Amino acid sequence: MTAVAGGLMSVAEVTALIGTGELLALAADRAVLTRLPRGNWIAGSTPYFMAEQGGCQDRERVFVQRFGDLQGHIRRYQPETLPEVLEEAPEHGLSVLILPAGSAILEAFAREAPLYPEMYLKPLVGWVAGIAIDDVGSDTAVVVDGRDGCVAVNEAVVLHLQLPAQLVANVHAINLFEPGDGPEIRFPRTGFEVSDCLVDGQPANFAHYLIEQAGAGSLPLVADYCGAMINVSVQAVEANGVRFYAPVFEGVGYRLARPVQDYPVEFLAAMPPRTGPVVFGCNCILNYLNCGLEGRRTEGLDGPITFGEVGYQLMNQTAVMVTLDGI
Amino acid sequence: MKDLELCRHLLGLQPPWDVGRVRLDEPSGELHLYLGQGRAWFGRYRPGSGQSRWRHTNIGDCAVYVHAALPEQVDADLPFLGPVDQEFTHGLAQRVVTCLQAGLSYRQVCELLLIDVHLAWQIRHALSEGTLPGTAPELAQRVSRETVGEAAPGRIPPSADPVWRQLLTDDEPMPVRMLSLKLLLARARQEFAQLQGEEARLLKINDIRRFFIKHESQLDEEIDRLAALRGSPMQGDGS
Image (cartoon, rainbow over all chains, first blue to last red; front, side):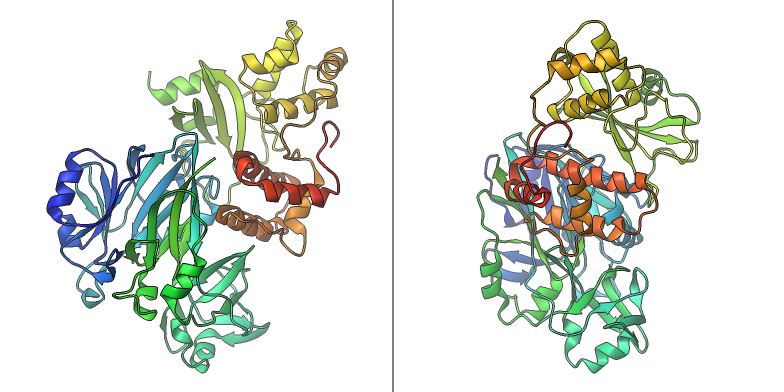
């Protein structure tokens, strides 16, 4: 694959790039996305980015992810067709998915993706589009299909890329959170909202438990999936219930995470060894906000700051990246 | 004739079976056909329905793969379906037997039908076990003579090997490096103990084994650990 530079670009620069017919994955404020010409691109809304100059909010420019001379095609999925996403993916390729936050299709993906046919057998990455924190309540997250300019609030857009036989896409999840020393927490059913739980086997109300753990609200729950640490982040703690950004799953044991001291420093230490170029990256808005990433750079990984990350399944407070490595 | 009608005809499908979707992966030369039963299905995903994937007879130069969830009651001989514990359809098995009966060697049959080494080993094993319908004992003996001394392909154990169950049931999961394999193993281990019926467990084992075959070049350490779990290096027939 021919290496090409992406990053933050002006609308004029992106317009010129779209004109070449190149396959692109874009991220920008919703108003900016609607000014772009039609072409071979998919996009999601976010005004937050990790760019060369560090974490930033930018409502004028577009973050561009380029895939060089790779061939591929774009598909748009509805809630009832999204489960086919990996069956339609190339046998040897990489699929980049963007979903809108707060949508039924995101909720369905979060719950059911681990059960999709071909899940984990073909590389799937992506992110959840969102809006500026200041606009919560007055704006809506969207995804855009650049082929016809369709702006959707309950659909997913996917770029299915074909890889040459000598390259393989390796998906990495960089999660600095580790399970803390606290008790194991289990939930009686899969869902975004919970009230009852078992804390070290004892029945409890999870909202009450969290309130007792002073300062724990910004820390995710962490589950160990055969060595992969998967977070579920708390969205809101209410009187008797807790709402998450991703579902907790029945049958999985969670622990509250241990705090991260200095995110950019620890991030650099956690970066996987690389043999090939990074072709995709994204990081979570909660890491941006809670770990002080504004103006600071996560070395080696640029991309949109997102409202959920997809490393096969939905993740929270995690950076996801893809390297193209030789085989 | 539309694509789906053509595929229905080429596969010889009879109601209630139908083709919901078809996908040609041009770079790999693979044609994937997604089957279902009944008009309401339309090839859509049904959560919790375990899907089988079988290699079928070629169409032109394309290797055909059939995807379907087997119902509890199914005509065991339908040529476009296969057994849950195998990765080839009855139709492909019959084509192999026909070619062998016509005098071709087993190696020639595999080359002619674009059968890769992993599938070739599985079909050969079924032939020698006498589990392919219509196979005379003399034919099975001939294939055994032709392939004597040939080890199992690569280093991936066959799906009947107990190591796969061990991988999914040991108290401590085997250390693996790839994110996708960690997530796949975690899901499979969680589900495996709760699955009702041997067929559902075989589907899970097939998923894991398929991952190892597909990513063999990246899984040296994990394949060595599988070998260590088995207690000896992988050998050929009978393993």
